[in-house]
Structures are given as C-alpha cells and as structure tokens.
Length: 188
Image 1 (spheres, helix red, strand yellow):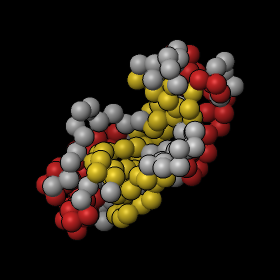
Image 2: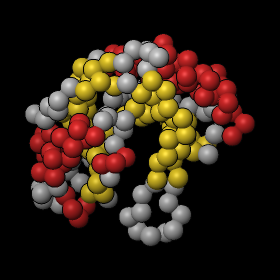
Image 3: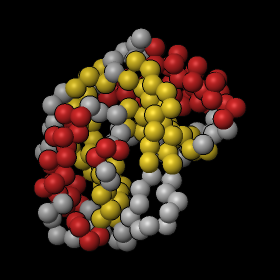
C-alpha cells in the first residue's frame, strides 16, 4: 500500500487558506494551466513512504505512536507561500516550525527502523501543495500574491499515517484519495 505520514490543519485554518486560494484562482491562466489540489487533501507531508508491505504495518504503527508521544502539540499558522520552480505552488507555515521539523525527522526515522522505504530525496520543507502546473507556468505572481497571507494560529495535535489510493479510472483530472490508516495525539 502507498503510505505517507502527515499532519492535517483543522478545518477553520483550511477555510482561511481556501478564501485566499479563491483569489489566486482569479489570476490569469489559473484555471487553464494549473491543477488545483482539493482543500480536503491539504496537509503537511512529514515522511513519504511510497509502497509499503502490509507486513511492516504493525512495527511501523508502533514506532510512529512512540514518535508522536515524544513530540508536544504545538502552534502553527498557515502563512505565506512559494513555489518549487514553475511546477508547484505551495502555502507555508509559521509558528513552532522547528517542532514540526523534529516531528518529521522522527516520523522518517520510525519508518526506516520499521523497514518502510522513506523518500529522502529532499529535505523537509513545511508546505501544503496548492497547485501543480500543467506545462510551464510562471508561478512567481501566484507566490507573490500569497506572500502576505497569514492565517490564524491553531494547535497541531495529531500525527496521521495515510494511505494514498492513486486514480485508476483514467478519467482526466481524477485525484488520489486519502484515507487515514492510524492517528496518534502528539505528546500523548
């Protein structure tokens, strides 16, 4: 099964960001050349595991539970934004980001120790993917429009192991579906 470890912002924080994203979608080329992610799927990926054998799940969940207990709930806010080249537009985070970064390191270490593959091709960068470009799109204006955004603070309280089911219908625009496999309270 295809898995990742994540932290999902609460609905009020997503609603604030959603209002900002609606403004961005009114910018030129936003509808035609960008694939906007569904706000229900917005999350911080702490560790991307990819395909994981089900036999690894018991040890993986035990180790992730320990990782969650070692890190306290902490305050974050969705804030600002940026881009990865001209391919991905994202919203960022402010607040106790060092705690989030440490949680990401622990989640990756827990997965490795359990025998799950961990994608370590990029260092952790707290972000929510908002849109992906279909071809080359100048994303700088979108990132600049996000720069002043500051959402309300919220408590990051839960670590989740999520299964990603890739689209199989072949319908253009279909997105992966996410389902939480297990979740743990931080510090708890």
